[in-house]
Amino acid sequence: MKSLNLFVLLISASCAFQACHSPETRGTSSDSSNVDSSQASTDGGGMVADTGFKASDSKDTKTGDVTNQSKVDGDEDTFMKTAALGGMMEVELGKIAQKSDNPQVKAFAAQMVADHTKANNELKALALKKKVLLPAEYPADEKAHVEMMKKMSGVAFDKHYIAMMVTDHDKTVALFEGGINSQTKEVRDFAKKTLPVIMEHDKKAKAIQAALK
Image (cartoon, rainbow, N blue to C red; front, side, top):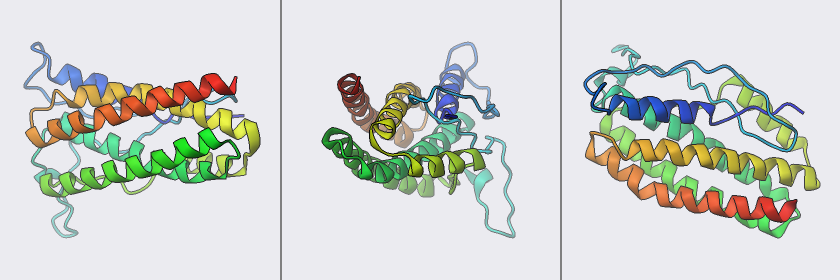
């Protein structure tokens, strides 16, 4: 069964983010890259998340798009947009996973909804303050994968969902570790506050995955 990798972009954005803050490259800006969709095994894996945003996105003053008024630099802009897309997906998949008959999976999914909803709201408030236009929906491939997961059930769904959570949270940890290097204090503080929560999710997902084998 095809499964796309949601956070291939996350780790790519994280690497690019960290490079922008290295002594060799500080002072330069980087556009977010286009990422090709990839396939994973039927046991899980994540999704490709191509936001379609670039740090150089321009503003249309007639429509009120304030992208180029952003008060953060290009790599911070990319970090915030990538984190927003991943957070939205965690909430939606967590809601879908409430259908699980496995108490551990169901409890974990409920925690994903609660924790990521809180983080998403904090990120939205930060984006509004810094005039960063966050993505509002997923690319078509991600939408199709969500619909596919809605049709899955039983142990097959549990294994697929938890495997995704392990892969995705590993890469999200790396993304937020990069976010801690932000030049902007508010972005840096958001990354520092959220990282321990994501690390705890990663730990729990791995424990559940081991129990499902």
